[in-house]
Length: 182
Image (cartoon, helix red, strand yellow):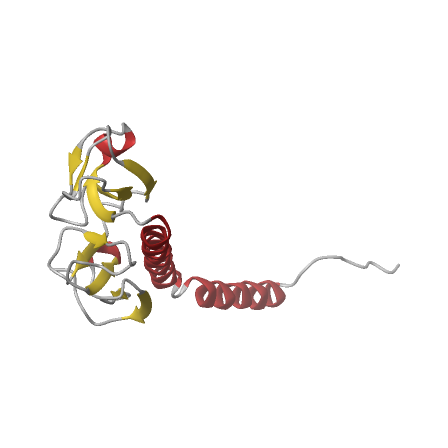
C-alpha cells in the first residue's frame, strides 16, 4: 500500500512564517513617519492652494482678502470674529473678503470664501511672519510681513515641513525643515 500524506512539514511552516515576518517588519518599519510626513505635506499644500486663491481673488476682484485663524464655532456659524493670535489649537484658517479693511470678519459686509479643516490637537502650526493674518491687497501682494509656515506633526521635531510666503503673496512649498514650532 502506498500511504501518501498531504500537508506541510514543520520546517516548511517555520520558513514561511519567517519570510512573512520579515516582509511585515519591512512594511511597518517606518509607516508612522510616513503618515506624519504625508499629513504635514497635505496640510501645507492645502494652505498653499488657499494662499494662491486669496492672491488671485484679490487681484481679480479688486477687494482686500484676509487669510487668518479664527474660532471654529464662529466660522462655521458665519458669525463676527477677530483673527486670533495663534495659528493652531482650536483655530480654523479662514479666507474672507474684508470690505471694511479692518482685519475682522463682519457677516453683514464680508464673505467667507473658504475655511480649512481644524488642525489636529497633536499637531502644531507656526507662522514666522509675526502676524495674525495674511492680508492681500488689490494687486495680490501681502501687506503684512512675509514669513514661513512651519507644520510640526505630533508636536515633534521630526518630519516638520515648511511653506514660504513672499511679499508678492506667492507661496512656495519648501518641504523638510529643521525649524521647530515652539
